[in-house]
Length: 392
Image (cartoon, rainbow, N blue to C red; front, side):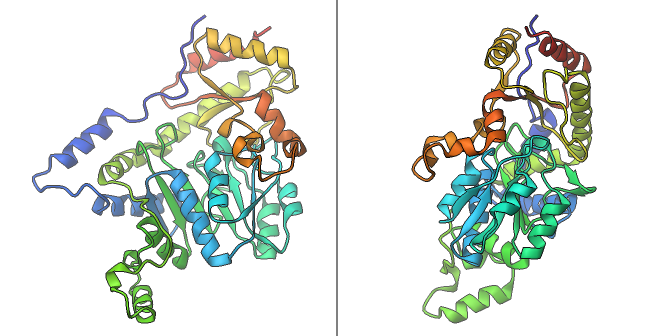
């Protein structure tokens, strides 16, 4: 039976494209690089999320890089707690900023780092916990939040895969010192390429604006910040004071137009994703597949499929059945599984270090995600569950 289910339906609609066409066809020649549309998207996103400040950048990876660079400026060298199950750019950003990554294993119910594992890793050298909310699950616990607060250790949230998910009724991305979002094509909301750095901290916000544009002081919106740098560096042209080793992470007006078109339907689309995920979990064979996920507050942009037992033969039969039915999937869930198995970390961790993280190891070999999107119909989801439940 052919189901022909891609990982993602087209997330850019005709309505979005018409908005771009209207913007480009305006009587007044539009500015194409970062300008008013970017500012408007930042304000609208901040209001939707519930934070004071947002900085629109060209990708979620850039958001990660900027955040870790800002943290290094504020806190100096040290360690950052990171998950073994995440996208490569999280760990790459930690390395690029000169931090030492320290890994904590995951909780199988959320796929995020386990709170007790994180707390056990904390030392005087810890500069932050960089937690990824995987595939739309809420990775937070009150125990973790209280533990970090008591120790004065900042939380950085990667919410790239979890737009609209909540913890205790409050949106993810509002708990940490900084939160990062991705608007890549396949995520809950898309600007084709794009990302956002979000914070309530005024100093972080001003630094993020500078880091986005080559580290230039003139990008700061706070006049006192600009004046202080000019006063302390009188030999420099105030228009060209580079306070930080920044890069060009700016995005375009056209991407912002698409984001502004998509944002008003994000909540509605998220409701459908939640309903899809509920239907998938309720009809999946809980004896074969793990179904005990923490669904409260979740907003899953994918169907999480994890074998209960490490059965290689069954796993191979499952992948063969999915390919035969035209069902696109990714093994290893986010980032392809345990990052500690990847070549870029081999010179930084001891031989066999990946084996110290059994939960991430199980996902690496026996965890998958499948597509979940608003246009997916209930009959397709039920047919997919039948296919999965019948794998021999």
